[in-house]
Length: 620
Image 1 (cartoon, helix red, strand yellow):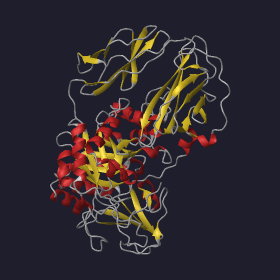
Image 2 (cartoon, rainbow, N blue to C red; image 1 turned 30 degrees about the horizontal axis):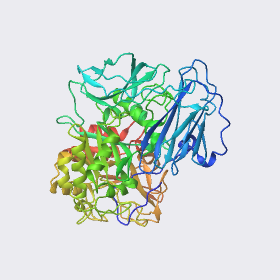
Image 3 (cartoon, rainbow, N blue to C red; image 1 turned 180 degrees about the vertical axis):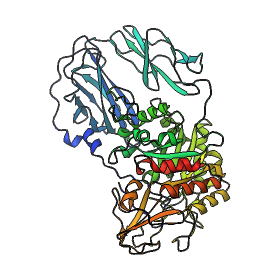
Image 4 (cartoon, rainbow, N blue to C red; image 1 turned 135 degrees about the horizontal axis):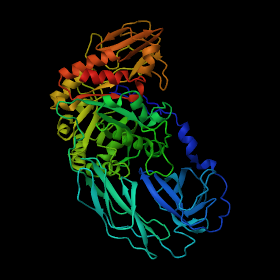
């Protein structure tokens, strides 16, 4: 959805607009699912296992896995189950899902109905309500293996115990599972992915990375090859040097935001960080956004985050995703990126312009909120991907898309709870306002008091001015300093940084923000700033805004004001940062002793990463 500017300028807009055609093609709306499934075929030796994959308060994600445990090929499958009243499927993929009241039926689609012996297939859905499925039937028989009457799946093994931990290996042992027909073997899962199948109750995992966190679970298989529930998780950190999630001594933070919705209309993927040369020039990535809903951190876009399948040519390492791998989407691509560039740390950013409305409820119980965020960030499926959390609350005790009245202490209380939960080995950061006006947004919350709990603040020193003031005056959206005729006092980077310092925030915990886009007006006759306009200039995704990679050619810079470039072409007037102005701003940041810089966001840069290169070389 596009954003609507508030009456007063904001520190910056998060672009929530995106093309969803690709997602819509995969998620089949129930409105289009009519008719009931044909009668189930005769029972075959197979199992169907349900997993709740995510929960975002108002809804949840689920997945069914159908496995052929027999000796003959299955040519089609039908899974049936009951939901309690009030729980329903809202969309599904990789199966045709229909219902009659609370009874639900899922049939294979054309390409995934045939299962050779030992093969399995999964389909997923999003749902609403809080109930769990019951009465499962697979091709007319029990979902625990209809061709073996009375054969129940095995129990969960004991939580594994780690011993003999070295830089590159760990020995795991666990208590045996039980089964009415006997245990065949055990699958060892590391960060949700199977790494070995063993017959005993011990396993030594080798080839690990030193100073790295891993999560292990165990799943038993019985003699019919049915799998039971996974064990509890054992967290393991290998020994050896750990560079830590933050920058090393004397190093500058060079951080970029990567948006989950960029994989749609913008067609921007994690691999673009490699092909542009940007990956080797940054230190950190903020993955945006997770939602804040129902007092919890929740998934922002399940499909883009961890389900989208990448082909070999789209993937960071040139290896295609498979339909049955435990993690796909951006999370898996980020995992591959970190393997290729071990210096990069990734934070999961929650909130943003559109999703900040949930913070007010969440901070009523900061400890519970922090626990929910920790549980999601450290989910065993992707715990190794993330090195911390970024909270993007726009704005505590002030107005953004909505107004918050939590009080000046709420932000500090939230950050204190986050640090207590995430501990010293995870990054805890926040994106914060740059409104340095007297009595403005910086004054509305205790940013100084909260600074002791955070690693750094991303000071959003852009979007100070824009075409939400449709008649102007034209002004640079990211002025480094004040200048004669600036429309609003206190709306510039230098005053914002100075105000944070005055409130006790160390310079090393402040990052200067750069926008990889411009803001513009139309109906402008005056080249210099301060001209009148008739409305926002046309933009590719939103009126009044355009990527740098477009503006550098479509409306080249004609001047500079307050350290930011501006351009007058035809009747359009734009302001944006160029490699030259970025280099100048980086020099200023170094002179101020700042911890580094960050930018919103990668896809606005050129294909060869001009702006990232300017940040990297400018900070040194």
